[in-house]
Image 1: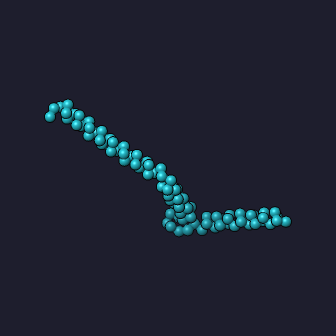
Image 2: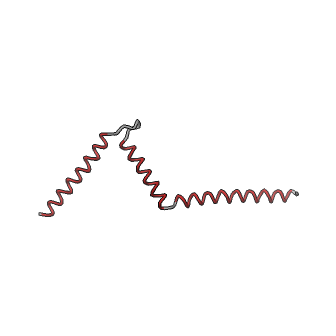
Image 3: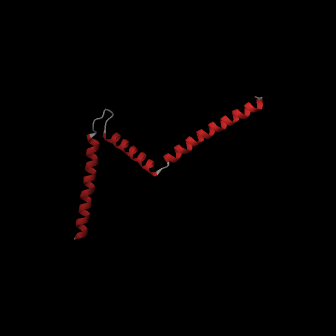
Length: 89
């Protein structure tokens, strides 16, 4: 084989390798852009944040944070009930 034939062959191999890498990248991006995958990622992120907010690094419950959240929810519910009662009168 001549020098130019080897060079052309090497170039073709490089092009094929680049195409393969590009195809893999495009497929990965297409997968990540699917709405179901985006929602799944967001749910997993939310779960991780919830665990981080309600658990200590050792795995125990953070009772003070959970209690504060429950108190806030109860407070909002009481205010909503009071507002409804006033509107009915």
